[in-house]
Length: 80
Image (cartoon, rainbow, N blue to C red; front, side, top):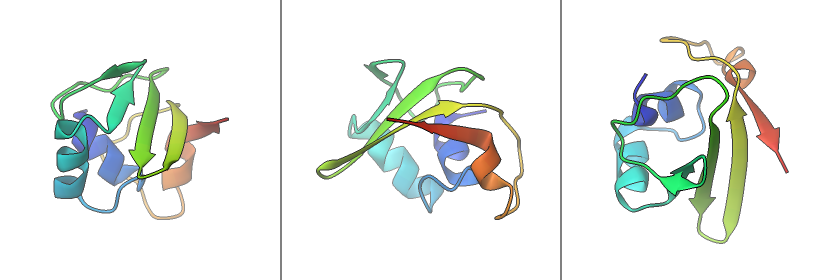
């Protein structure tokens, strides 16, 4: 699944266009490297997202095309 779509489906970022802009602006790193929105996310990838001064690191546990609001948190695990 594309990185921008994964960020939206997992509800880490609210809209896909915002997710794509974050990737293009090098605010999303995958395994320590900035990636484009077209990067194919795999289980085990570590994503780091910068929201201004705040940083969020998560590990991808599963990749699903659709996830309900209740199940979206099961797609990733926060890392400190």
